[in-house]
Length: 316
Image (cartoon, rainbow, N blue to C red; front, side):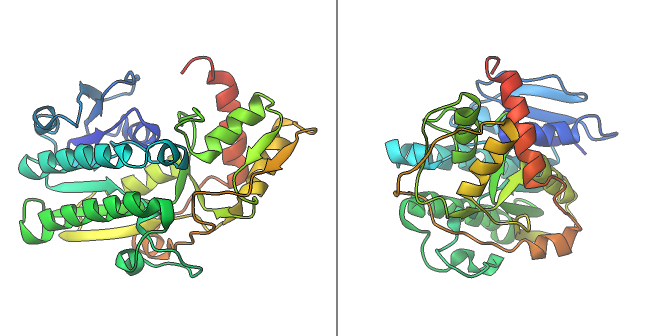
């Protein structure tokens, strides 16, 4: 079985490639656009801009399974500056990639989707609630984009029969080495890591710090992807991928400060927050179906991320 990974130099794609590299009898085709490829056993690299339909159509030739990690991340920082462009770019990128897979040799697709399609709720959300109500506030466009892309993939499988099977994975907030640490485009967590390491004074937090997040290490998400690589039964399935722990933004910052020895940090709470206060999703169904479990604790993951950024901040 030949496996393609689209968007293989991004945070998630890179960890997926590293999880797949060197597996016997499973050659990997990995695509990149601008960020340079890296050395990985048994991996063949192809440069591809998925906004170009022609380039996309040639990316997955001879690939039985395609893992879609390509796209732009629509973080709060990105949406604050430009709420539409990243959404439109993602629609072009993922639509072209899915069409290329569905019209080519591919029989099975794994789409890395998002939990941003869920409506606001204080309840623990199950998969079937993804299509109820509207995504909250500033996540309206991003959430509907992910809903639309999942429906497109389901259409290719269930109605058109262009694919035998597909799985959409909806991870919570993904973090890890090779993340985007640019404060203009990155998620709040790598931005916090950067400010802690660079001893920013003060460190400002949007909101009151009590808003909670479910963090999942990119290595754990990669293992979730490998758990659904085999087509199994035909059809389309969607799963949440979440860890058991909800942590507040303020407690995340405190864990980073403690791990890095930044004892005299000054923290300012800004009161305004673009994201939802809480988004709790259940990962029970995916765990029951696959036996997958996260292997990285929040504390271990944050400590690793700090060390990686310190070692690599002047390299990437």
